[in-house]
Image (cartoon, rainbow, N blue to C red):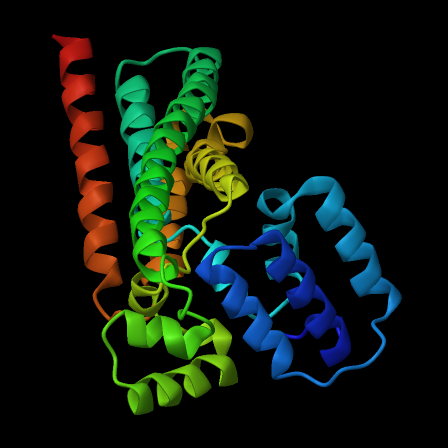
Length: 284
């Protein structure tokens, strides 16, 4: 990913992050990344970020640096969480089923609009809250595990540098040096297992908030992709563009698979079954 920071800027930022992580294995991660870069005067961007680091702290600034393409920010990411793909599909299917039931019951269009708005807003809040709890629990678990690893690795004064941390974790010195060179050559491709065993994972709290916000927005987007016909299409035909919206979502998310249309048509048939059942109940 392109970054506006020069190598000198990146070195300066890693030194500042190393100061913030003093006494932790993460300090050596930043120090060795900084040592692999040329020493030069940093630019105004790096100086601004260092000032913000002192003002905001690592927890708030880490996602900003990651978004700007700063290499070596992988330890601050929150990993091991479910992706939002299935959430978008569940939201779209739920909206299509609800719309089918309401159309089958011959409700007023204003009623359908209100129900879909409530489904989007309240469902988005519930999903965001659920994802917040999931992500918070995952972060706390990660921090506890990393704290125990850190205590075991750094309790010895000899654990100086990434290579020494790897040796303390059980690697031979030659293996440790080779792995260390590989990690420093491409710090953004380091595996989660490598980061975890060295006590380098330190997920920032703001990733929990961003994950919860993302979940709420994905839910709203899935609902909107199916619900829009209630505002633009006559009542008898609202299910047609709504079903096409669901199929479009399946194509966007699973278009690389040749069988994406099967899952899409299965969900459309589920919604049409609910439409038929509610229509039958309405006329009984």
